[in-house]
Amino acid sequence: MPEMELYGGFLTKIRADHESGVNRADCFVGRHLKARESSVATGVTSGRGLTACGGWLRDTLLAYSAGSVLEAGSDTTSSSIISCVMFMLRYPLVLEKVRQSISASYEYKGLTCTFRNKAREEIDRVVGKDRLPTFEDEKNLHYIVAIVKEVLRCRPPLPLGKTPHYLLLSYQLKTPSSYLGVPHRSTEDTIYNGYLIPKGSLVFGNVWALHLDPSRFESPMEFNPDRWMLDCTLQSDGSKSGKKRDHFSFGWGRRFCIGSHIAEGSLFIAIARIIWGFNLYGPKDSSTGATQVPDPWDEDNFSSGVAMSALPFNVAFEVRSFKHEEVIENAFRDAQEHWDISGLARDKR
Ligand code: HEM
Image 1 (cartoon, rainbow, N blue to C red):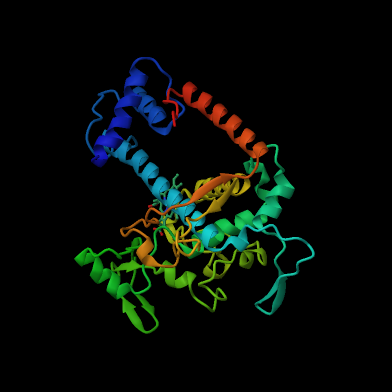
Image 2 (tube, rainbow, N blue to C red):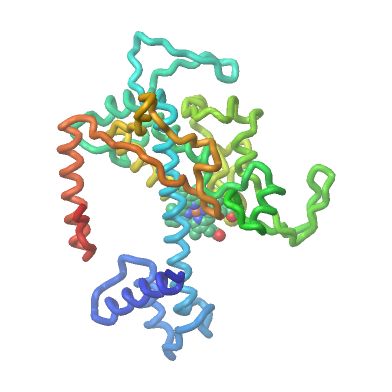
């Protein structure tokens, strides 16, 4: 569907609600339409850019402002959730409930760390079986937060590939493994490592190279959420300097992702609930009986483009117990009631 058909369709629907007296102050577009209408006497609001009196977005810009947020936040978030499922299949130890008597320890930056806080152990201890994880649990679910960070480190949804010159070339050729990254432009002449980057140059940061830098991340090609348990002060905060950042999946500088908090919250709740409720299995090879799990490090298992996502793969979700099933079904019913109230169609699957 062309962009403007989708974004413009939302605008038309909200305007129709608004004109028929439905209060759409619940959303940015509804509030903007109402405020614009009461301030712009002429009513000339179609077209691009701002109104003649400044300040107010005309329809096309309004539709794009809202639509681009929708688009920026959906593929990126869903891509990370799917990557997380892939990593869980590939690294089942991350889920495993480790008994205290087992002391699996490893060396990390000169410290001896013990695998203790595995995801299941943590979530069962903090949440129990009788309810779903909520946002309030985040402060006590450190290992789940660490998993979110590790997924964003290992599979940034908007990466630049490992070999930029090849990838830029492949962009022109439109071959399947082009990860473009997000372009920035230099605002002044800059000397970096003896090279002049003239003002106005197009610059792509190589997120992937930063995330796989062994001087920063020991054994970088290992999905290891434990690495984040050692330092909880590292944050996804665009205003922080490089060494104080956890990862660079949300970009940097003035155009740092404005949705990073929503994204982290969405990833936390989705991943916490999947881990709380389900065992995950890959399909078995009929002749060898071995589990077949796609390799999350293999670029061929991911789509190309600006936003990257795992190509379809098979995974079975098995609910962990009857109690978990009951809680999930109750939550599903509640969600459907909210959908009814919002005028959305019920999920009939
Ligand atoms: C895992 C999820 C997400 C990732 C990895 C992600 C990543 C990014 C990146 C890399 C940028 C460009 C930053 C730069 O130029 O350096 C960006 C920009 C942006 N993101 Fe996100 N994002 C995510 C989720 C979201 C969500 C949920 C929203 C909105 C609710 C959102 C809204 C935006 C917007 C509007 C921009 C453009 C900001 C600007 O140009 O000033 N993103 N995001």
